[in-house]
Image (cartoon, rainbow, N blue to C red; front, side, top):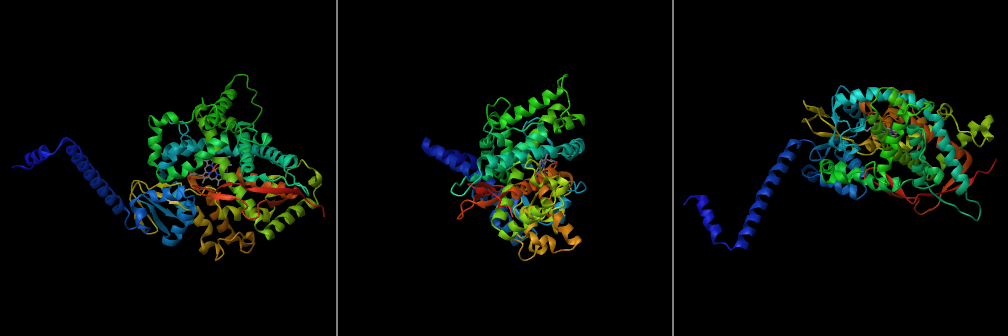
Length: 517
Ligand code: HEM
């Protein structure tokens, strides 16, 4: 009897329920086989790249570490163990070599952005530069953005100064502890208030007012804080982005009509652009919106670029502020040297007693120890710790001697660049700003270039790098010039978790007026 007829006869003997069970079992076996074959083929594609076996067959190991809140350290430890190139997911390899970093980001290498960047599409039909994965479109967009961003920088300083004053005022108003009266400030959130007010002010010409209110505005922080861990999870399972962008999940995406949260930022950006297009607009104030419009960017694209500026420029810089503060508070020798340098600078300045003055960026750049503290903290705790994967071009590429077929995603372990003992010595994991003074000019340049990779490189380089340095330098100078700072909870200065970058809670610090010498 032919096979198909025999199978029909056997099925006929079964009860209807047994038939359903048998069909379900059959389907499961077939799906299981498809899964095994697919997993085998994916594994085979990059089997020559070292890494843990489990990571080479499932992306979920990385997802697990995002949920466990130790993903950056995990990636770093794997890189050291298997490096210079490690397979961290079936289709993702990671490196931590500064030269490889620069090559992958160069125009010449022709890599493009990985799937994860789709997550930074705020409007599904209109990507801003950070979400553009096609190299040609990015090039055209960035040509328009770069000159405008550098014009924007020249007017950013006065806006950063206003927010530094607002922060210092807030301390004086609410958080100055005196003997017998402790008034600790939760610095993690205040750092965000500061960076959000700076970036909204530089972008829109008007700060959102987090510092003024000393609280969240339109529940923006509450909702975005909940979103940040999603960046990690989407980073480890980037195809999820496509599911979220498709109907019906797309209906849950934030929109201009929302009463709170990210949608408010979208509405604010859209209104701010519209306001500048009105015939009666005086056009006297300078901000990035005007700079972008003047540079020929379509108004609807300007809206998307403004949202990107706020997202890209706030959490990153506040992570840098928090971790630099933590490093200082836990390293008394560095704290003392930083304050001594600041005092020395102001000792013979007329502005020393002017409570309203803020150090100029040009002057701040002459303070080598302040700069060393900031660089050293960002080296150890890079705020942009995610993989930021880029896709291998059509011809494939060879990285550290391993051929990578087209479409492979190459991620970066920026923590590895900052802690590689070959570059930083046996105490690479120690916060020691002095290391920046122990080397000749050539080595110094090499170290500086490696730390700067936290801002990416080449065609992906951050547009707000100078604004970020300006914020960090000015705030530290003006705070430590006026106040002494101490961790409030000696047993645990803060609670740290790492779903994609370092997020903190309960970072309470105390400010006291400095004793005059
Ligand atoms: C310590 C603070 C900061 C760090 C570590 C940082 C890091 C980065 C990195 C790594 C990228 C590139 C991502 C990639 O495509 O691979 C980037 C892009 C970007 N950053 Fe920053 N950033 C910081 C502060 C800022 C600030 C203050 C602003 C705005 C004022 C800003 C605006 C942008 C923009 C607009 C992009 C997109 C550029 C593009 O797609 O070509 N960033 N940033």
